[in-house]
Length: 436
Ligand code: GDP
Ligand code: GDP
Image (cartoon, rainbow, N blue to C red; front, side, top):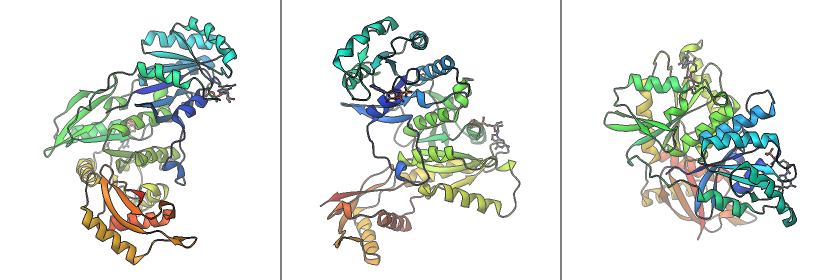
């Protein structure tokens, strides 16, 4: 099920990122601790009471270089309108109502999306009167908050949650494989999608998705149904923000959330960029299956070593997704495009693979005998038994004497041992520890 999306808008310095961080809280992130992967704080999942939602800080999406204030806030407001179900419009109690606030209000007003005004920097109850100025914005009763102190956020989120749309059921059967094609602008995502749709003998139909601009495309091959998630997101609609890399990350995140397998598209001509790692990091963290698709393979000079060198570069840069297979293709010449869907199917099967508990325990005990667990200050980690608790991604629980005694390197070792027996190609594996 797709979660509702909340966007935060407001001119610079009103406290958007402070409030974003407050709402998101300190979530433990696998990727943040992974060397070489940095993370933008612009999009995150969050919870309030029994509501789960995603939240965007539009202030984190820098638009064109020209730093004209009004242009920036206008574009960020448009982005919020396009992407979000509910908008939090933040203003600054200390600064009062400004022309930039009024400009944002005008744009939001036209959109008909639910808007909740948060008057930030009300650090003391005595300052609550500041909210009255902001009734003039025309979005009803403003909510006083303090991002720094964390006050008022409960009231704010209550109001936001009231406007969440009815939850829509996911429209696809369990046996349908959902694919997200992700990557930076210009790597060739839309060309690849078109090549896939043109090359394969497919039954194509567009499926209206959960937001007004999300369109999925369904196709079938050899009796297997696939859905390309959010093909509309790859169509160029000509908005300024669509050419920005951060927006492409945002779009990728939403597609990652709804898919089983990610096609992580790289551009052979440009090589690997920091932003590629970010996008792949999110897919890894979300536990999706992943395939690297190196596109524009036609466009580069090659000799017999090119393939090996490019593979090595990918493995160096994306050490945290060492499990993902790599395909070298050209959307332009259609070279190896026909290998994509069979690979997706193979990865989806691994992503959903279960190992019987007795087989898993045999494997685990063999691994432990070969290389016993570490000790810490004289205490040794004891692994009693384990079991696979879920799939997509495959997740195993190990029952141990003390989870604190586990080392990263030993966890790595165990995962490698699992992969020796069951390759789980293209899928991350999770190990959880429970005290027993
Ligand atoms: P953004 O540009 O809208 O993302 O704003 P920031 O979150 O970066 O905050 C801008 C400045 O306002 C920072 O110096 C914050 O510490 C400050 N600020 C944010 N929230 C509050 C608040 O509730 N009270 C006060 N007094 N300052 C705040
Ligand atoms: P997107 O922004 O990731 O959707 O990228 P597009 O599909 O719009 O492609 C960006 C540019 O790369 C366009 O000019 C395409 O014609 C070009 N392109 C896409 N795939 C290939 C390819 O396989 N080979 C070559 N040489 N160019 C390609």
